[in-house]
Each structure stands twice: as structure tokens, then as C-alpha cells.
Length: 227
Image (tube, one colour):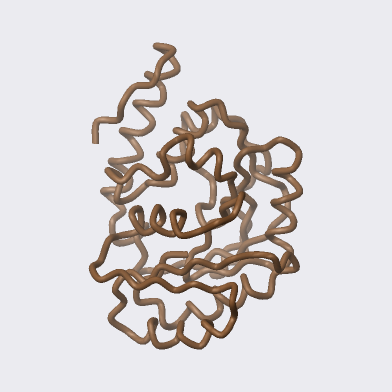
């Protein structure tokens, strides 16, 4: 779980993981040079042996922090979590049951905290849907370490839309991906979040990811993204 300046939400996010019905876990928190009270708030969770907090000396950004967190972890499965969201208590158990059926990557549906609406509207996403757009909720992803290592982690040339890039890389590697039907995540609407602040850049990156994905399918080989 990367975090930067999330003093108003980070405790709720952390506690939603520590209260999971699947308690055999490690929570890797990457404090990406927060300048508010985030670092101070995180210290109280260090009494839990499942928690590791790593503070970056410099602001690395989300993508590099995600790869750093994966490198510090020991588990066979990796689950994403955003510092302004919440996971429902049975989320990890629920996704592990799906991965046990031969799925390599699984997202869940989420409820929007601002409106109560559920996203995405559909619960089963064929790989072809990513040719149109990415409707996975990034913070809800769980995937195998084998898949993560196979695709080389998150593409660090993508400072935004890195989740879209990772999903496309996973599909092109032959991975089985799905969105499980149950709502297991609460998605916050953050006006200061990456989606809002860097929207134009995110759209541009997504356009190039989609283009390279289509070319890869057409040519029958991996086509590098022009970003």
C-alpha cells in the first residue's frame, strides 16, 4: 500500500486490512515522503508484526513504490490497496478462493463512497474488454507473485495508468484475469488524487497502452508502448 499525504484516510485503510478474516498476511506500507501527519500516524501500527512501514527518502511516485512494496513482500499472492479506500472484511478470503480456481489476477467490484453506486456494472470481464477501456478497480486487484515476476512488475515508464499497463501485460503473457461479482471494496473519490490531478496524462497513457495492445494482438507478438 503506497501512501503520500493521506492523514485523513490512511488509518481507516490500514485497519480495513488488519481486520480481514484472512489474518495470515503482511501489510507493506510505502510512505512516499509524506509531508503531513501520515508518517506519525503509521507508527502506531508497527506493534503489529504483520506491518512493515518503509519510508522513501525521496518521492518515488506510485509506480516505483508499488514495485518496491512487492520486492519487500514474501507472499505467494500480492494484493493492492489504496490509502484512501477500504477493503471489506472478507475481501482477501474471497479473492483467494477465486485464485485457487486457476485465475492469475482477480479484481472485485467496488462501491463508490460518494454515491453508493457500484463499479464496474459487469462482474465478468473478458480480456477483449481492455481493448476499449480499463474498468478494473486498481486498489482491488489481487494476483499471483508468479504473474507479477513474469511480466516484470509495473512498467516504471508509466507514472500514471500503470494499472492498465500491468493488466495488458498480464493478458499478453497468457494470464487468466477476472472481476469477481461481489462488492468487496469501498472506493473513495479524492479530488486531489492522481485520477483527478493528472487526468490528461492518464488519458494519453491509456491511449498508447490501448494502441500497443491492439497492435500486439494484430501482429501476434508484443509491441512496445510509445510512452
